Length: 458
Ligand code: FAD
Ligand code: MLT
Ligand code: ZN
Image 1: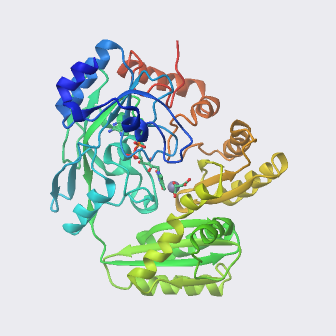
Image 2 (image 1 turned 120 degrees about the vertical axis):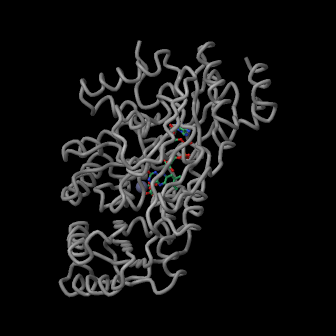
């Protein structure tokens, strides 16, 4: 089969050397390690379809991979050495940017930051933003339905997808590369692939919606005594600025402490409780005045205790760097267990309190690194623990509190291989059976990213 694949893709399209394959078999945290039979690097949808047909005939499992930035080890093969990694990175063309129709058509391997820069060259905004945007690829972003810091204003990736091209498990090409805002012609099949984490098909191209680039962007960093005051600030700012708020990130003092310890960067506001990074954007004048008025009210009413507004591009970058460096600082600090959870927005403070005290009771040595997209009810409740503490036990303590608050055990990172057991535990039987039904219909041989999202069935 490898010989046939080489004939199909050329020598550079098939990696079999262990050292060459190593980066494709380990996640960015260096905690999940697998082994692949080979790594395939097609250059076109036709090649992807041929690979899928071959694997289907031979019964070989496929692990699709984009930028390999998954937070849930979703793109790593298992340890058997029998799975094939299908990397989309050589299919990275920007096929078209349409500033009038406000769309961008991209191949799956295009890096998100490259796509955003191409849109900006035309005065258009692709508002999907997160720390790994310099490595994550469009196919991965679509397949994880990525969230990030602008969801509050623009929605998840799903809201940006107008068209998709997908190659199914048997090599069938579904061509839905349409630039349409309105398309109710039958079932909207692309929705089933968005967020399916490579378990149903291979995304080979996408058409994404663009927006006009806002003329004014104001970034502010504030300190608040606790998460409850953080939500009061959100309400106050929403009353003041309406939908101009494009990011509202709540960050614990512990998170900024990690950034200071590992990067030497200090928050430019006084406070030892919590922090809020707020971004507002609009094309009408008066945005800055609005933010200033909101900030003044918040300080007068004791909702915030200190605050700064960035005065320059470099100050804006410095404030965002403090936020984006949290993940790397956490990695440098040692072992951490990620909990990417969401609860209804008003329940966020109670969730934080309940989960923190539940952990303190069961695992007194655990430290909580909590930060995230409070404007979406999504917090990264990451737990730093010594290596002898079991991940499963910690996950259960946190996720039980999530369930008690009517929340989700994965707000934006997906299930991957990390949370398969947790999904099976917390999702209801009929919902899981419906998911298995979809999986069986689209991937009857169970070859698409096995062991991710759903537990294998007999
Ligand atoms: P990969 O990691 O390669 O793959 C992710 C999943 O998609 C896997 O299941 C894989 O099999 C599947 N897949 C990949 N490409 C395809 C394809 N073409 N067709 C079918 N399936 C495919 N995520 C957020 O949502 N919000 C954040 O704020 C956020 N911040 C992050 C910050 C950092 C520092 C890091 C490292 C990650 C962060 N992430 C965040 C997670 C990650 O960046 C996203 O999940 C991203 O969308 C994954 O893209 P990728 O190309 O790296 O996909
Ligand atoms: C982020 O928002 O920075 C990431 O999604 C969170 C993480 O590192 O857990
Ligand atoms: Zn996040």
